[in-house]
Amino acid sequence: MKTISIINLKGGVAKTLTAVSMAHILAVFHNKHVLIVDNDKQGNTSKAFRVHSYDTKTIADVLTARRIDPHEAILHTGYEKIDVMPANMNLIRANLEVMMDSTRPQQTRLRAALDAVAGEYDFCIIDNAPDINISTINALVASDDVIIPIKIDEYAFDGLAELKEQIENTRDDLNPRLRLAGCLITCFQRTEADKQGEEWLKAKPEYPVFDTHIRYSEKVTESTFAKIPIVEYSRRSGAAIDYVAFVHEYLERGKK
Ligand SMILES: Nc1ncnc2c1ncn2[C@@H]1O[C@H](COP(=O)(O)OP(=O)(O)OP(=O)(O)O)[C@@H](O)[C@H]1O
Ligand SMILES: [Mg+2]
Image (cartoon, rainbow, N blue to C red; front, side):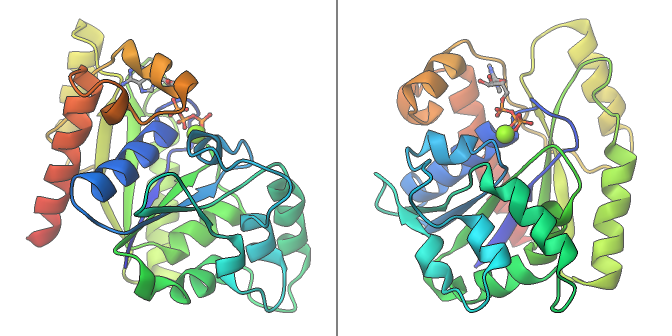
């Protein structure tokens, strides 16, 4: 199982859209078994797959309960090859609980849970909150690859250096497999600002950038309201075409 963290300290940059679209494309176009982990108290990924609830076990239980079988916190979706480990606001309390309980390892709990189900999936995609906290550190410790979605605006690159440092520290201390697969430019519009932002980032050797960028499409908002992945909702929208191309590029790069 290859585990990918979708992460950026900034909010609203299309982390969730990228996680949901990638999971959907890997499952439906590439026939892969995918586990998507919702690692954000907002629960947007859980909502996108219609499994958001307070009646089921969630990632909060995985992080805090002793001897929990991770299968208990994994739900099937309407897609045969996609399962979800959901999240809800209980993740706030769980984070505090993990921080206060130093009697057992605090940073490797998600990895231990994912190791237990690794044989059942080809890919695990972790959708993260716009933060660095014990949840996101657990995600980085459990991951092979990191993808950083970036939406170009005047503050687009804030926090990038801090995130890169966190990735490097996690690699040095706890997870030598961890790799920054690349930055993905999202919500791209043909404005001068977007073109310049993309060029600026591509000129920085310390930040690999995917060749594919994701265009802004009005259909995206409609698809999130309808809780249907964009590629299914509007296959011909720019965002759908680009997400398919992006997943192809990601898989091809991984072969090298
Ligand atoms: N390519 C796109 N075209 C149009 N709208 C988009 C596109 N990508 C993202 N959006 C919109 O931008 C908003 C933020 O997207 P999303 O929820 O995926 O971001 P996020 O980084 O997960 O946010 P948060 O930090 O709150 O978790 C959503 O309303 C989404 O519909
Ligand atoms: Mg999100």
